[in-house]
Each structure stands twice: as C-alpha cells, then as structure tokens.
Image (cartoon, rainbow, N blue to C red; front, side):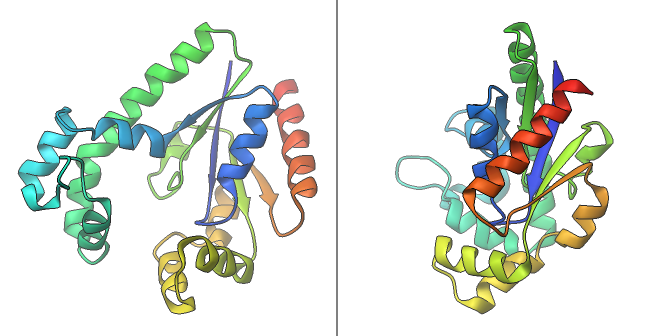
Length: 198
C-alpha cells in the first residue's frame, strides 16, 4: 500500500480533496479526527491536558472547551507546545495503527490528512506529500465565509501558519484550488492515477 500525506493552508480545500480521493477508492486517515478521539473524556491525553491546564478548560459534559483552549494557546507559544507534546505522539500512534488496518484490508493507497504537516516536519517520514493551495485572496474570502471572521482575523489565522509559498516548495504534488469543483476533481484524479503507477 502507498502512504501519501495530504495538507494545505487553512481554508484551501484539503477536506474537499480528501472526500474526492475517498470517492476514488483511497483510504483516508484524518489527523484532526484522531486528535478529537485521543482527547475524549477519561483518555490519557484528556487527563494530562486537565492536569496541565486546569478543570476550567472543560465543558459541563467534561469534554474539552476547544474555543477556550484555542484562545489560550493562540497567544502563548509555551502552552501550545505543551498541548502539542501531549496530543501529537498519541495521534501519530493511532494513525499508524489505522494505516496498518487499511493496508491489511487491501487498500492500494492511504491518505494521511494533516493540516500542519510541514509545521510538524512530518514530511521527514511521510512522502510523497500532496499540497492543496490557492491564492491568498481566495483563502481569506473562504475563511471569512466559513468561520464568520473579519478580514483582519482571517489574515491573522493565515499568518499563524507556514506560508503557502514555503509549503509549495516542500510538497511533491500541488493542487491549485482557485477554480471550479470540476477542475479540483480533475487535478485530484490525475495525481491519484500517477501515485498508483509510481
């Protein structure tokens, strides 16, 4: 089985590309879904996060208050590092387990979808990598529309990530998502066919 990384800037369309790849027969392992899974109440990561950040980051149902946690780590690099050191190793272990399951099930291609793939240096063990990119104006407009943000807030979120220019240099394949859904499907299908033959 071929393992492929999938990433993109915020609001660049990587989730749409993942859905297209899945419809074409690829197995999808989504890092965000795994990150939610490892912090469910009672799990080891959840216990560590509560011990580190206090019980006031919990909602009434004992799940993490993501908004509160996001706000906390957005302005504190040390807090972000602490949170990542709790979550990331567990996500990777769970991802490797899922990937092994898909390989055993006979999937020809598994896609590991990771928003901050390059920021976490995952390209060092995960190759090839597909990047979903778009121009900054499109990205800003999509993010404003999706998350109901002001232009200034959208720009802040985009600036918090590695630039798409830098990501383009690190990627093996780039899907430019400035056009129609048909164009996105065409590019995605073309890359998947190429991956199956290499």
